[in-house]
Amino acid sequence: MASNDTPPPSNFQSVSGGCCSGQTLAYLILRVLLGMLLLLSGIEKFKSPAAPYHYQWTYWHDKTNEAGEVVDWGKWRNVAKPIFDFGGFNNPAVWGEKTVNAFSHMFKAYALVLPYAMIAIGLCILVGFLNRVSLFLGAAIWVSLAAGQMTLPDNPTVWMLSNFTVYYVAALALVKYNRFALTRF
Image (cartoon, rainbow, N blue to C red; front, side, top):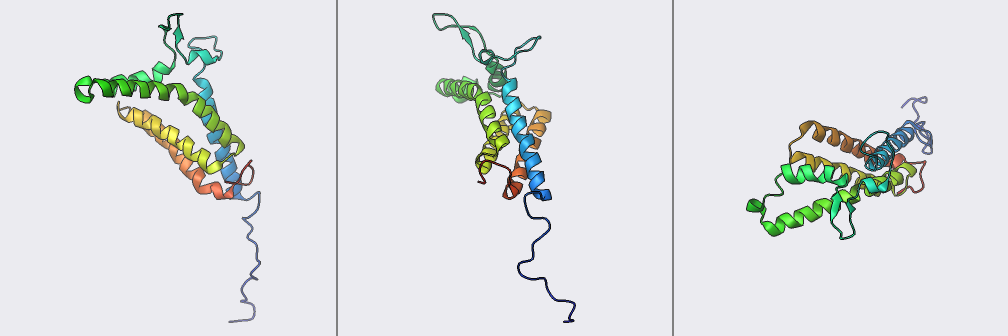
C-alpha cells in the first residue's frame, strides 16, 4: 500500500449526514405532503354539497327528526353506499341476511369515522408525532379505500389510491432521516 493510499480515520463524517442532508429534507418534504394530503382530504368531507362552499361537521352526518328517523342522508353515504350496493355486499342470497346487516353497520361505522381519522392522522404526520405509526395508519386508510374501489371495479381510482400508498412506503423507508418532528419514532 502506498503512503498516500491511507484509509480515512474511523471518525470520518459523511457529508450527507446531519439535519440538512438530502435524505432529511426529502423525508421532511414527503412527510409534509402526505400529512397535508390526509388532513385536507378529511376536511373536504365536511364541505357543503353546493356553492358557495363552506364547511360544517353536520354535512357528513345524517339529519334526523325528533323520532330518530333520517330525514336527510349525510355525505358519508356517498362513500359507503356505492361500494356496499355495487360491490355485492348487499346481496342476502350470497351472504345471508345477518351478514348483510353486519356489513351495513360496518360500512356506516367506517364511513362516519373516516374523515376524523384522516384529519387526526394527517395532523400527526404533519407535525411529526409518532412518525412510523402515523405513516402506517395513513397508508392503511388509502389501502382500505383502494380495497373498496377494487370491488366495483374502478381501476383508475384504485391506481390513484395505490400511488398514494406508495408515497407512504417511500416515507417509511426514509423515516430514519427524520430530524424535524415532535418525536423521532
